[in-house]
Length: 77
Image (tube, rainbow, N blue to C red; front, side):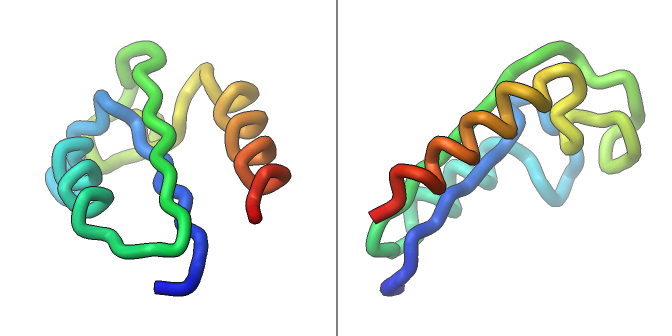
């Protein structure tokens, strides 16, 4: 791919379709001009897996999450 890809994922995501291990597998096989992965651990989720307030929403780490994505975009080639 001739695009730059940023994959952002929470290590504690327990949803069956968005598990962290699957994101790592996808990242490994992804062919891109530039690829990066940002992974977060934060605190434990307060909601049910695959639902609101789970790690999918980066609860309590959203300021850091937003800064990291912004910095990645600013440094894009």
